[in-house]
Image 1 (cartoon, rainbow, N blue to C red):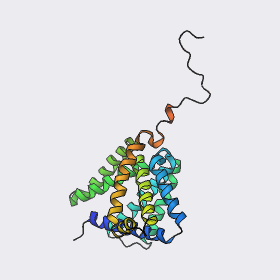
Image 2: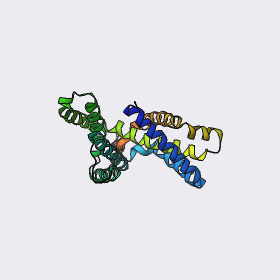
Image 3: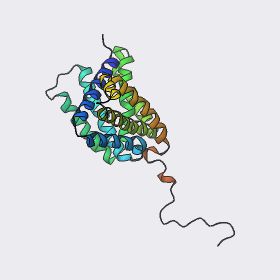
Length: 224
């Protein structure tokens, strides 16, 4: 029996392997552009609050919609991918106006999923609601780490997949494509490193420390 974690890893591995293969069949500037974009986002992407909020909220909403359909056992008239796209579009649009939508979702959704897995059947609804509430509050309080992890994860994924596609004709490239878990491991390591690097200035942090434009310089003692 395949556990949810094993199934998710298998699906993620198949996805990264397929994307790497598509990049290999594309002109080499495409792979180079993906690698360059991934490196930029990995090192500095968390500073851009609204882009991080839009991409992060859209991604969390899409995954949540697919999970809800699968978990509830519902067969809707609209395909699951379409529902995921609608959820991503709505949450992404909301986060343009209110960027805090992203950290709320990023905290609420995993907490609700964990509560759903651990709660007794007769208390599942209350546990999910409580988990979502607590997780959402925690997400708001931890907006900087959430933004750093999200940006670093996206950048690491683009960098690893782009590099695997660019190097597919080489021995290391073929090994990566044949063993997508190695790509996922590289993504995890790069995400941790990128998060540590970006944390101090993530989510717009540091801008408030800059002197106000046009403000008069401080007067030293004895001057004036």
